[in-house]
Image 1 (cartoon, rainbow, N blue to C red):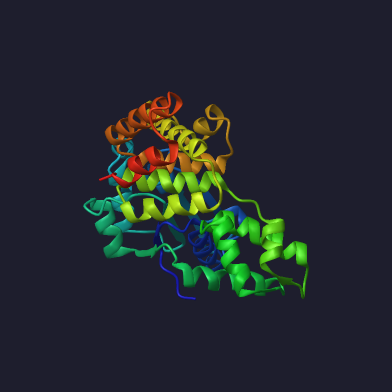
Image 2 (cartoon, rainbow, N blue to C red; image 1 turned 120 degrees about the vertical axis):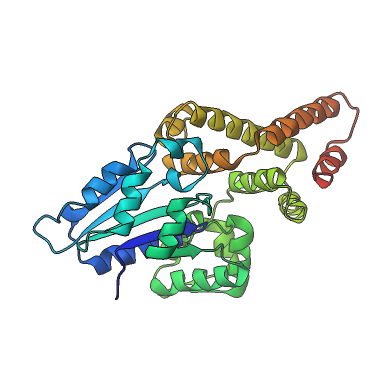
Length: 321
């Protein structure tokens, strides 16, 4: 495997990006004592660069991983990083170091000098969101690895129940393969028996579609939620709660809070905090506040009998611009 000295991984599929990074690490032949990781929400990128400039310890190579590279975005936090040291390093990297920048789920600023330089001097790999056919193929491969087969109707049931988020899907498919065992067959009945419907993931998806103004996605997400017999009043409350959380996390980030701080304050897992931070960074604050007010007004009218819940919510959703 021919390796580059500098990598930038970007895109939406975190699980696939993690796999690509693992392949680079394995190909580097660096041992565990020469693999270090730096979170740029916690430290200046210069710290990682200083490490990258040092020779490996009793080994021929080393790997330095940079996570949450805010300096590649348009965020205010980017200005606090020592970009000059990074630029100098990209122009003159250490031959014994493999520098990996993990930009997954980050909105990259293509006008950035660093991004342009990385595209010119490094290896930039973008992982696009997989479509339905690719998702089905990925699901079959996960089953094949465990010596398990899966029926076509089970794939459809899995998609409808679990969704297409690969990190969550990996957890659920692991449950299924363990349940049926080697040589077993996963059917739609098995999926409904073993897998857990993650309503919060669907609410995140619908809320994001609202804030992005993607009308067709809004309609599709809403119809799927209704088809699953979700109560409209509950959907209104959950979407309002999700938008409030995004606004709160957005304010926390502006005050200098990190992902770990968000997890503690929101009393949630590090994984969910990761997505809360991701959504909050890209949230259009004025639009979110407007929708939150409109949902509050809708809730008031529903409770006072001025409007039917389903009709009122659909009017709100389908008139999003």
